Amino acid sequence: VMLYDAKLAQEFASKLLSEGIYVIGFFYPVVPKGQARIRVQLSAAHEKEHIDKAIIAFAKVGKELGVIK
Image (cartoon, rainbow, N blue to C red; front, side, top):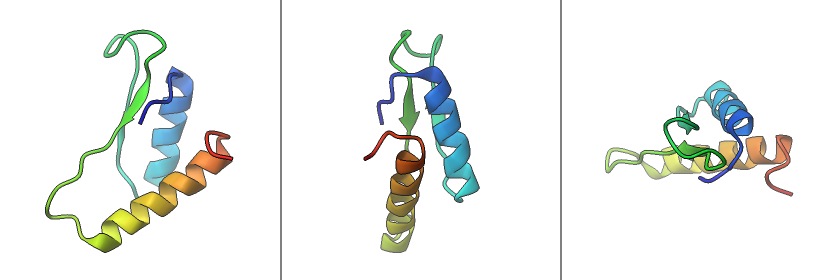
């Protein structure tokens, strides 16, 4: 999930963890400056309930941080 801002990616990842969703925020020097992002890994072991929980958490955090209106 592209966020483009390192601080925002870190805060987004931290807030998702508080919601029980573990993701990684990547920013410079791992990716080019201005290309910060959240890395999400899904697997066949995830059930629909897991995906639903993640979507709800992403929406909540996205709205809190002004990424989603």
